[in-house]
Image (cartoon, rainbow, N blue to C red; front, side, top):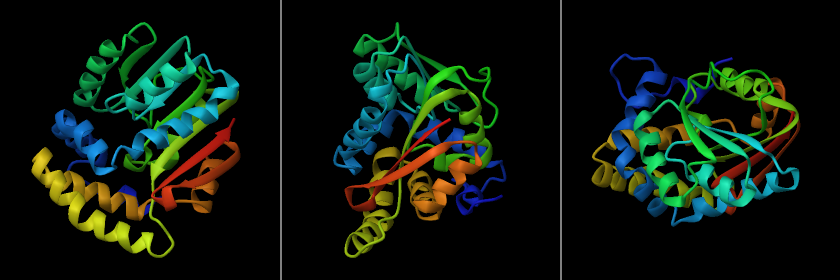
Length: 245
């Protein structure tokens, strides 16, 4: 099945979405953290913390962070969960270079490593990880079904999935406020700071097009996950999805 956000690309250069997303994140890697925290008023850290807290009772020792970007989710998870190993995977080498610097500053290089991976064709063996997680990345998948199926494949039976993703608020007045913010302030600030206005227009478009709530629960079940639950955070600006294999 093809989902709406899969048809949305950052640029109009004819390349496949995967290649365009890689190029986009390489372009904005050096300014991504500044923009991410500033545009979310640092609430993104709280959202990640909730997703990590949901994994804490299971004490996962091997964790995969898909679409790790600059490694914020991986670092927070390593500090909170103290696994033996945590691998952050991404298609953008530029983003992971920023992540490696942060991991070294945090003194976590013995726990966290990075791997350039295509989410649709992960190189890891079946049932490798106790937990798989992703923050604000799955809506960029070229094929959501393939990416989620791969995340399920590399998760151990009985293992746990934790995802946080930006979503559209559904209730007044947050729905209207979010529309105004995402269509005016976000792309303007993105262009000024990152010099890539297309990137932040793309991110807004994918948030609006991405399946959420009950629809996303069905997609996760189709990918092989069980006990799928979701919780809207901060008036629905973000949604957390939890599941097991």
